[in-house]
Image 1 (spheres, one colour):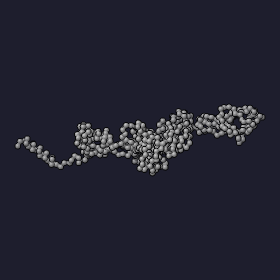
Image 2: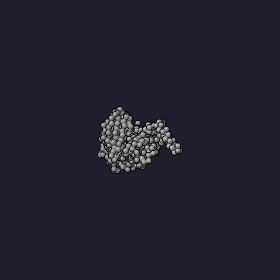
Image 3: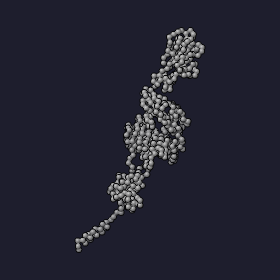
Image 4: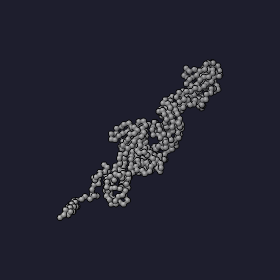
Amino acid sequence: MSRRKHSIAGLLALAAALLALPSLPVQAQDPARLAPLPHPGDEVSWYVVKEGDTLEEITGRTLGVAYLWPENHRLNPTIRDPDRLRIGQRIRIITSRAPAAREAEVTLVSRVVKTQRFPSRQEEDAYVGARLQERDGVRTAESSSAELTFEEERKLFIGERSLVFLERVDSTLTGVQRESIEIRQGMAEVTERAKGKRRSEIEIIVGEARARPQPGAGEAAQTRASRPADGGARVMVYGGSSEVEAAGETVEVPQGMGTAVPEDGPPAPPEKLLPAPAPVAPAARQAFDYSNPRFRWQPVTAAVSYVAEVCADRECSALVRRQDALTDTLWEPEPLPPGALFWRVTAVAESGLDGYPSEPRPFEIASPRPDLLAPAVAAALVGPGTTDSEAEKTVAMLGAQGRLELHAADDISGVATVQYRWGGGEWRTYAGELLEPPAGSGPHQLEARAQDHRGRFSEPWILEVHRSATAPEAPEVRWRP
């Protein structure tokens, strides 16, 4: 037998031996164990290519994000062209992948703000640029605030005396990814710019209630949620809409409305938010030589209280002072720091829902000195007459030509007006004229008071005035304030 015949016979024998070996069907093999290995934690399955399939289209359909198609290409190195697959071909594809831990960056810190890191929950000072992970928290003190940025288009404002934690709802990339925050105390507000195809959404958890803000057509989403001291939740929608769910029921809350959610009940029917109060003082861009101006605004019908805020920025994200539960339309905060500031006010309805805040109005504090004292006011005797200031009351005896003039002073904010009245009558504005007592010898009671530019009146200064034609001539006597 020739050498060629021996070679052919050997090859036939080898082929027969290989065919005799037990084989494992391709579809029965574990695709996750075949080289190359997938990303740790991925779930991998076999897939049979159908007409029109491409790796990008398959990846988008299974993972919800088509841009990961190179990951599937890496699992199938024999595929030369990812856009030209062979119908009936078996390939390995990633069917599930846990998303990478999403981060939030601290982009604003105002006054006293702490972060809580999971799992220790140890608090440390927050700082701009810090990155928070899932289950980390933020705590703000009184008149303090913080802002977190999740993505370029989504921000989270955290108000004073609040405790907020970052959470996650979804665990895979499939479909729309949902993030969540939990408000355990205080208030937080989510703003999100409208964008094209949304691959993620945010959920706000407040007690047993869940709110899911949605941008409107071409407009940003803006939803505020708070946790009242007595439990439950308050959800206010200033932009877009929000779906609020609690106790097995869901309500759609459109822009300009809100809902109050009881501790163990479903959301109340949406109600219209109160309009913004009209600011009165300080005026826009008004400057003060003292640090404690008064703030006033017009009342809002149906408001049971107001929230007044002073901020370091036009968006009113950086709180400087805040006061809630104001039942009057006047607020006198503690002294403010020097610099350019903004203020706004919000009306609160009986349901506890915040209305629309007024447009932040700029003003300036030029001096750190507070104006703590009311003006001083007194009278001066002009012409003949005498006075007696040693008695229990100050008494003036005016001669026939004797008159009185008023003087007032305020070293910080300055005197705005001076007023007087005779015998408990109507108050009149003093314009620098000499005062003549009423007819008759008296006694006549003169009261004088002054108001400073902060709006505070002095206590009335009282003088008992007598008229006598025989009053001796005397040098001019003045009571200086």
